Image (cartoon, rainbow, N blue to C red; front, side):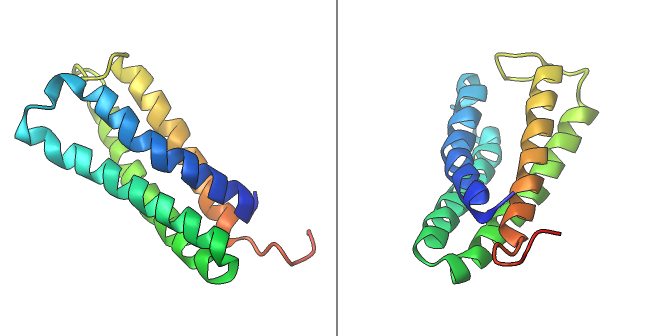
Length: 128
């Protein structure tokens, strides 16, 4: 995993997370109780997009922003994944099963961890 991988994944997740959450909760958009669930994905997406663009312009200093954005995404992703696992027996607003949502969230969390590792890895050091 490299900084370039982390940056590309940040661009992808930055666009996909808000869109996926809008699709998932499309039946509930008129309800105020859904707002916190939408806001967190838009915040993560915005942070990832900003950090990806910043790290492209200034790779050395931008790496810190990318690490911070991926760290926040890992924390929020873990909480979301664990919450989904605890409510597997309850219906989910997504157009797929609760187990399918948990699988998508689990894979997303693993990719977030890989991207965090990629932006923390020193690209200039020789491979071990």
